[in-house]
Length: 148
Image (cartoon, rainbow, N blue to C red; front, side, top):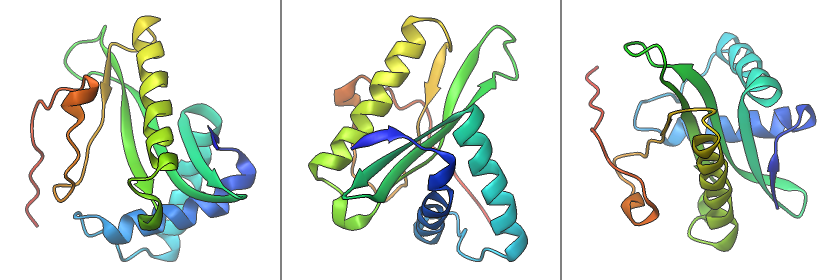
């Protein structure tokens, strides 16, 4: 089942966020207690005011997509919804529930664009993924490089 996250999902979503962090190429694996507190607050904001959907299997949350609306810093009339994280537990990837999660995200994005709620939608993937979203109407504009 794909559905919007609720406040009661906060602990499960936080756990998945930590799984996402540990797998990230951005080296987010060392959460402190302060980071956990901050993440809880941000997740709560996404649940209540922004966008967070979850994939649920037999009552267990196994995937999620979180996003926030933002104004373009250069063009004041342009707003976008920017995906912050997209995570599916590894054993659920390339399965129906994983596809349903992405399809729900895409349907929501298409509705926002059509209704002019936002003028752009932003989605990122890790460099190790082999997902080609161009077949679903997405355009790859740039790559993101990090140096530490």
